[in-house]
Length: 443
Image (cartoon, rainbow, N blue to C red; front, side):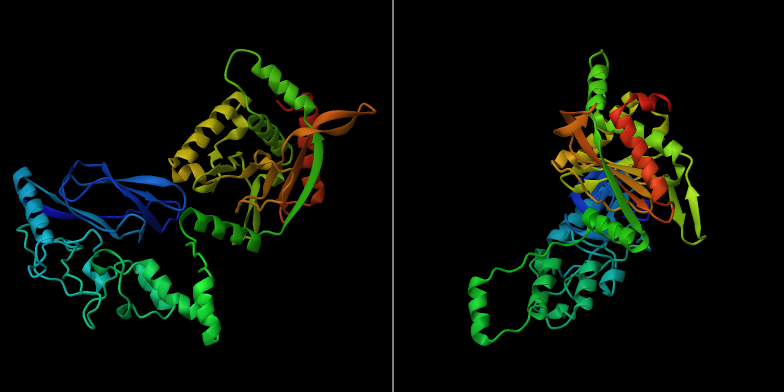
């Protein structure tokens, strides 16, 4: 006997509460196997392929590409059971979806890929047409009313769109949706908000403005960009940060790297050498490898260095984390930086790859700049910034010479240490950059 199973957006961990549909991997009528990925979603952390725990025929899917869904919202329904019965149920469902709206619909969401369960539509469910017993979590829903109808259900499925309209006083029944079957989208609500948000001008001025002035572009602060914004805002609200910086002669460090890479074997990056210097400096100044527990009013010094590093991608700035960096050699660090950077640019980082950092290394010199005052990656206590390494005039052994100079900056949480500790850390890093032999004493 076939059975209808509803698969909901699962909890993806790391405190994530919603995800955006990037790409559907199955269509209605497809046969799926247990644990087969059915949709690719983007969270505030990473791109994730979501596998379905049921095997059978897909009879409905919910949400369109680009739409955000909260955790627990339906993704797809699958008819599982005997092969012939399952196929028949799927064909009946597809025929019902393409037919006139007068027939009762057997499963939630039939007739459109954008439907929602009755509890979200607040529409009375209708009787099921499939012989399989209905799923308690997936009642059937009626066809949404046409956009122009004065009564009946409002053609909007996203709870985020409903909330946006409610918070801004927009009457959804007065809107004509631009989506499939008159579906009201976020853009429709935002368009209705603009006349309210913009100041009222004199008739002549308003007429002139409507002809000559372009409309401001609105970019939703969501997904990765929204998560970054929230984290940076929280860092500035909670952490009393301070920054100190110093110029360092990196000529000897660059020469040491060239000598390492002259022998056979994997190449070692400048970032890996700087990371190894950081882990040695943190061993001497463990105050900077810590976090503040506000609830307990305690500073927590952490035993391992999970080193985050800034990586710019098409999706924006990401901070992958190298676990137990203090145990790794420059060669191992180079390989791990390369692996995580490739995953970041491909959008394949797991949420666990982007969390749990204890200290961050930020190489903004790749953007052609010398200095910065970065915001600490909350809840960490410090971040080392590295500018570009370029030839500059420098007094070397009592004479003016052209040397490879870099600016180093340390932004730190003033609650975990004072300026003396921060200055000692930064000076040790600069000494290792100027004379790599200093690092050998710590190895």
